[in-house]
Image (cartoon, rainbow, N blue to C red; front, side, top):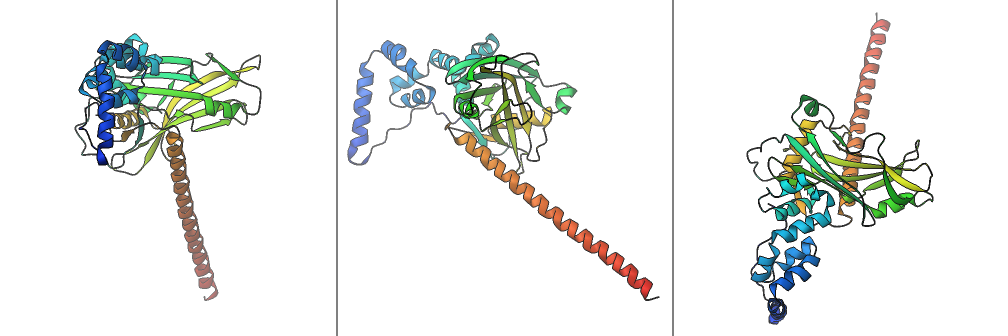
Length: 351
């Protein structure tokens, strides 16, 4: 189901038996520790990837690392929004509980242009749940869970957009408003997680790039907009891409000393810059969750920004090709029009 393996791999031996000896001695030391000590004082200090690697060292660690309480606490510490009772209950229905949810939500989604043979489409969910957490330099500044109804005609036909803040709502932050490095400070210190959860099919995916892929100051209002993005494959059989864009708008408070978050929204755009409607977006997200439109890969700090820049490059190349086609058509029209005029005057002069 995911890129995070939870099975015990066969042991390998390096040349001369060095790797096998080292691994064996480490496993022997760990096996000598009491299971309660391992579980309460060592495994609880590991992050998700390290916990997965630890489960491959021995059969005892494999068993201990599968404990549901470990993964439940890990989900809470990684995404505080999952402590919401609605999300807690939903996570418990996943095939392997919190372990399956973490495996779905932690890796970075990347486009999959060559999906496996498509299976029967899953049931369309009546709701899509968004679990969102924003941190500034590892300090939580915003956490929210929002349900979006997905069956109405308005949702299916209107441009897809989820807003987390009302017009008058603001979120205080410790970010200093004064200074020329505010944009750089936000780009370096602000992190965001937006987990989309399908309660019907019990799948989830993180739509954020974790760090902002672009930060700029609006030329008119002076507000700073930080964009987080994930690039996914669009139509199943095409090479088109879509951008899941999460925009966080920050502005100075009335006193002008610190920044406050004024807007947080999610929308999905195609390569023409047009917003997709709810029905199209839901289909793309469901394919991504099933790994037909997006593969899961171990998250690296700058990979999200790198893929966003590749996406922008493809958009520029696409626009250049369009402009070249239009120039050729313009040239053909001018030549055709000139030939008609020339033929008309030649006809008049030859009478």
